[in-house]
Image 1 (cartoon, rainbow, N blue to C red):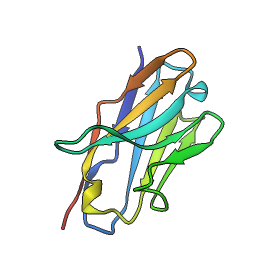
Image 2: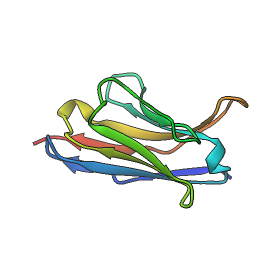
Image 3: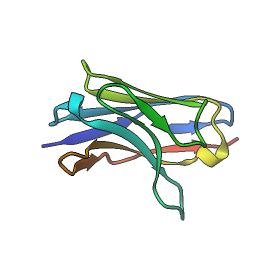
Length: 117
């Protein structure tokens, strides 16, 4: 059974930082591309950042220079370090495991991030 469990969300003031974690089980972690997506109220889910098994990354323009995605193969965990947070970063953040060669993908349950003073 595949599980992706996010943690680390919460309430933070503008300019603050948070680190999200996503622990994966039930998959061969190293061969999956791992991604963070977010969905704000009334908006479509969008890609935030993605990291391939080999470590290559890509980011949404809106978070470049502020967010960093990383992965730890020993812990089967992907992280999203979010700095200089803005109110427009407020959303539910979802972890996704993707293996495009097979069409298989899995989602976590989501973690709320609220940026507000």
